[in-house]
Length: 326
Image 1 (cartoon, rainbow, N blue to C red):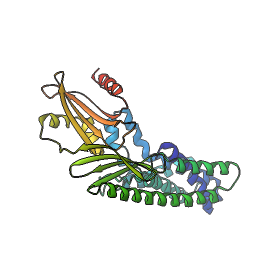
Image 2 (tube, helix red, strand yellow):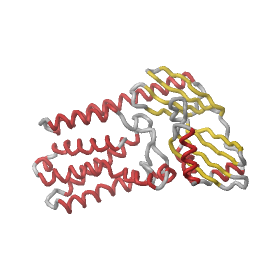
Image 3 (spheres, rainbow, N blue to C red):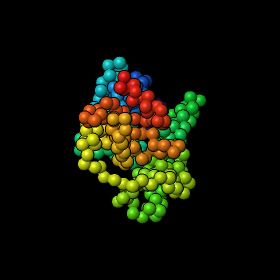
Image 4 (tube, rainbow, N blue to C red):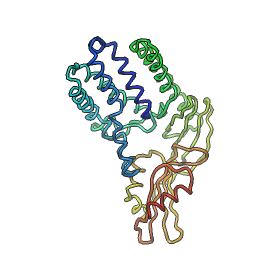
């Protein structure tokens, strides 16, 4: 989820914790728990700072190690230890329990996004991405904000957030059923589908769809359960090509390939330069595919420049490549 949603979830968990008698009757513990739930709801996303290095490092590592099983166990210990130094009178066990819940829920809800996490690392390095909830879901964010407003106006936070999370359990179940229903509709429309990837949008009944068959890629959208195919591409395996082999050594392109499960590729030659472009098919927007990787190579297959990330116009992409070259 986005940072704002994780933040309101952390505050909400601090309010829910008032149902715990140890928290409710000890102001030091209540304060430590609020610190723990807020920090715990944010801690796994500390890897966002990797974006300051470059997009390739960020794409390869965001929601990776910091969301893994060892770190889910480590974050609550570190945060509880810090809170205990500030508030030695607080109950350590209950501070740890609520902080652990905040960290666990952060990783758990991230699994439902299309981006996913390496939540079962080190058991497996594969990305777990269910594609059921958008990275920012207006309903999830809104119901937390509504609960916080009621708390500000004096209603007891424990009962408020019990009701909020009961509603959210129902909401997640409804989204899971919607996801399964859309997949069934896609299979009916494209019977030879081998792989179907759904990406939720902020609109409840609208989904982006990428389908792989034995020889085609289909890009489609579901809107109010109506499936519309937008683009069809021939599916070509990666060729045995010295140009492609050289391009795949580039950090930006290799990061893209490690992250994207469905893409098409292009190789062209002009102005004494090879251009290798990979295009993710999951995020079609306004007739374009904004998530790309591009590598330029000279005649000796030396990499001249490269980029991976989100670009919404060709002009902006060329500017980024010019900056990299400069």
